[in-house]
Image (tube, rainbow, N blue to C red; front, side, top):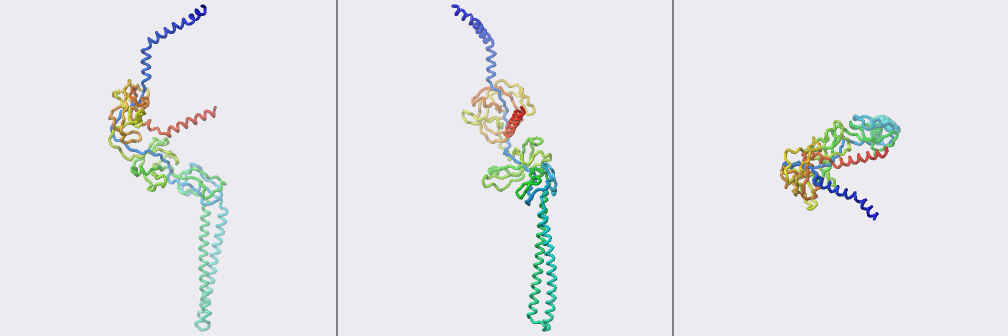
Length: 439
């Protein structure tokens, strides 16, 4: 009996606690229900579709090359005796970059010059001999005319003169040969001094004093960075609509304003036999040398415009998981013109959300796709379409609170490239690694 009384005594306070909770829950039920309903309604971003033409672009990845970019190789096999330039140095055409050991080449030149002098002396000797023989031939001719010399003697003198003339011609040929050898040895000796063939900036230095080099040893890369060339690869399909003269936009975080434009200058008419692709080139000025050779840039080539259509951002297109159809989520209500919108200049994300608005999935026919926009049928100009958060509906109709946005804001978000995101991830990983090392 005492045990039962003890149990009742213990649980007695919990009875009052339970009834207290019921009272509190009943008084707050209406407010809690309202909060739960608000929490279940998602928040999305939406934009008004507009009517117009879609600029047709082809997005490619380009590689930066310096103007007159060349690799410097030695033409001789010899050790390096001096290096006169470093990476980043600006040189003029003809300026000395490297010198090679020249002892053996100087010795070969001296030998060639000595052979040339010998050949010249042999010519003089042959000329003197010919002169002597011709005098003898003249004397013999006179004796023969006076019948004081036999015809055989005259013929022997004539043959000797012909042989002397041939010896002189041979000696002269040896002089020319010795002279050519001497010029060749001089040119070879000059190649021990490696000079800049063009003006430009030195990079990719691979030359050190004492290093043995040959014709396969790349010493430097030289190019003019004040003007650069962007190289892009075009497939055979792209050649049907891309041609020289079309406007190209080059995007890079290294550019002063992030983007510049220039016409497409050249397209190679010869396609690779395996990949069936070719190269196109864009020339742009680079006065501040922000673009370096080997950098990757994003290139948009504008090749035309689509027909008139309703335009929606690419981010508004959504594949319905239930039907597999591509479409957009369209508002069944009107947001009103008095609603403030989020713009690229005004990034204040505290802009108030609208009350719950109904949306439904509308399949669309895609007429054309651009880099930022798509031309579609099935949506009217002025309709509000969701650009961010449509996956929260799972293909079903529903309600959402809306943060209205403008086209500039959506395009700025869509302009984030995959490589930009990857660079951000790599920077974060590098920072984490540095923190780990420091700690």
